[in-house]
Image (tube, rainbow, N blue to C red; front, side, top):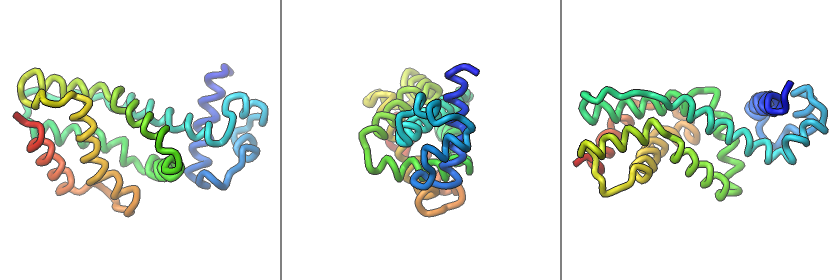
Length: 194
């Protein structure tokens, strides 16, 4: 097995361990045992449990990048396009297997906001399908060009996170309600539509 494959195997096993037990409880010895690697192999790839968590976050961001590929029909009204993009973004964000792990990652990164900010910036820059959609709408004079596509995407994500994702994470809300999606569509169109 290649080093890359072994590292990926450790990350996937560690995700399950952290989801089941949280971040603080399992030790690196326990993680090595459960992933069926030696401690030496584990430390070869990850200098600490925090380093492993950082790698998990990067892995999740890469997965999100790969799953955020979609095509929006150009003949749809702007509000319907915005709604479709929201639903695409929520498919990944609200997947039940991601919710608990997101809670763990958020709780750990509240202690170190710098790394999380870097990763959020990376997500914005790599959210190609959404950025291309925004840029196309700007080029066709549907969305304002007073803002960069990254600025619009950041605000869009903040609306989704504030009204849907964080209430699910922190308040145990079960799902996105239609009224929440409608609020985001209305706000987005009010702010950016020409």
